[in-house]
Length: 93
Image 1 (cartoon, rainbow, N blue to C red):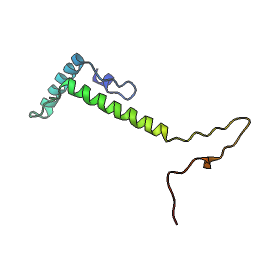
Image 2: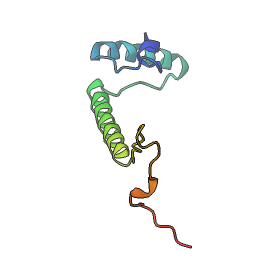
Image 3: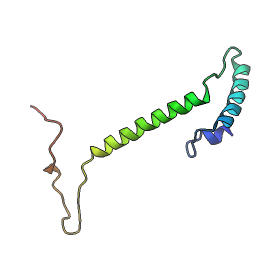
Image 4: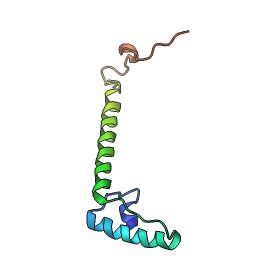
């Protein structure tokens, strides 16, 4: 089931019960390989971190979108003047 939650095509944060089951599974595997190691992060802390990172990602997406300069090419005007926008970078020689 861990492959389902953390695969590239279908990634989703597990709910608390599923997380606890995964935590027990990973703890068992870790104990076999690293007897001193344990997984101790609580579910609600991971959810909080996930939501914070999701908000940051959405904000960055919106910022990136606001920086785009659309080119309005149509049948009537098959070209566009890309210099009609002020440049944000001034090149000096």
